[in-house]
Amino acid sequence: MFLETVRLALISVRRNVLRSFLTLLGIVIGVAAVIAMITIGSGTTEKVKGDISKLGSNLLVVRAARPDRSGSTSFTPPALDDKDVAGLRSGLTDVRAVSATAQRQVRVVYGAENVAADVNGADTDYLIARDWNAASGRVFTESEVRGGTNVCVVGETVRSEFFGAGDPAGQSIRVGRMSCRIIGVLERKGTSGFGQDQDNVVVMPLIAFQRRIAGDRDIDSIYVSAADGVATSTVQADIETILRETRRIPPDGDDNFQVRDMTQIADAMASATTTMTGMLGAVAAVSLLVGGIGIMNIMLVSVTERTREIGIRLAIGAHEKHILIQFLVEATVLSLLGGLIGIALGLALAGAASLTLSIPFAPSLAVILLAVGFSALIGMVFGFFPALRGARLDPIDALRHE
Image (tube, rainbow, N blue to C red):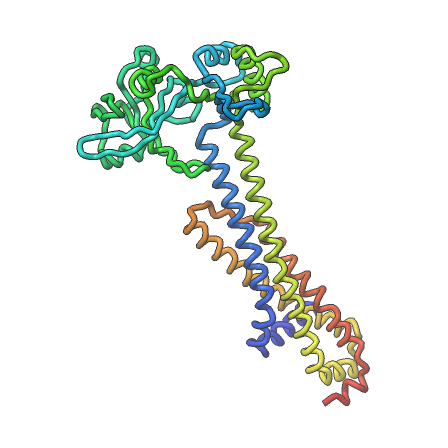
């Protein structure tokens, strides 16, 4: 009985193809917009998390910062120094690495070519904290760090700019006013979540950087990588306690440093993109309501056109529930067809957007199933009144209808 009703519903849809298509167009657009927005939003969220994770896993970054309530906008906080680094290394237990770094943007020259690159002075723990390995060659050793040897490793952008696909190991480049021998090339990191090319970089021993590039002993940042399974919030609290001691901050004094938890930043950015995706999805869902109204309208027209057919069926023994089910099924099938077409169109749009925007294609099976169910529900809800109207027709009046 049910399969026969579905067959009749498909025949009715096929009988008026253009009208049926225009009717379900609202459902198609609504479902496609919702699927595309949510899929693109999910891909954007994954990209944000992935880009920030490239900075390093469980990473915390310590920098000198002006206290929020210093009372003077001209207050300059004391720079981080070796005592702060030593205090963190001796006081922190649940960490993989603690690394002091300093950074400048410097003109790097090789032959007739030159490029402005981020030059980092760091120790051997820096690459551990950043989850960064050498793609070729090697990284500098502890003895090279202590001796301030003029060696460096370069990022993929610097390598390709100067050497193409060749191996630069053993070649010398000029970084600022110093000559530096390349000993390795770092793995490609790509663009960070903040839009920075992480491969446009030269990393050298910190002491060499301080002597030849910066001209001071200042430390710009301290990178701390929490051990696996250890909450970064716990490590952050320990860092704050240790630095207040090493920097001699009184109990009632404000911190003159800042600890940034990259995990929290990633979660906050992901939450923002998720919220925006939900808002866009809600706006797109309005067209589903418009599509439902279109289905109600066309079903009312269909009941009017088929009044005589309804009268004949009632006269030969059909019950009201049979008429009700028939028109409900027709409305549901019509809406469901629109939903299926909308899902295919939405996934195609999301796939095109993922290629254009270079974001992951992240369709959600739950959202697709929800779209199918919601499409069927719209057909039932908006088709119920026309179906009920058709079921309650008087057989005599229906037979007289012209």
